[in-house]
Image (cartoon, rainbow, N blue to C red; front, side, top):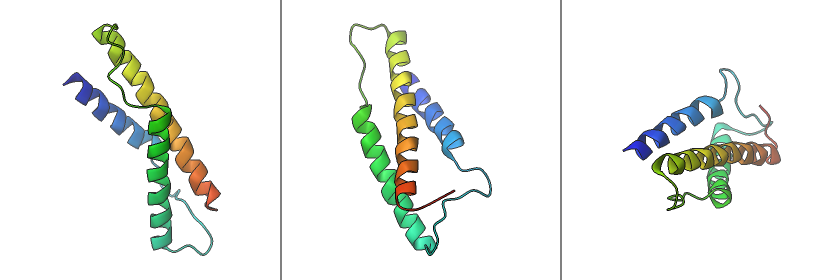
Length: 99
């Protein structure tokens, strides 16, 4: 139950931090909405896969206390989310997009 609450809280936090501010979107000269949506989906999937490889989900160290395991999982989730955002941004910029 606690794990679910933590994941949900982190997800909402990531959505709030990772979301573009009003009026800022990825743009590329000559790209239509379908191309932007396709490139965004491709970069997001690649970023999620790469971030999960760098910071895999784990159940923690069995020798840790419950609080220690939760703390370690939170740190790994934060690292994974930060890496995912950076990888996504790099991918979009690599495809020629700007904000």
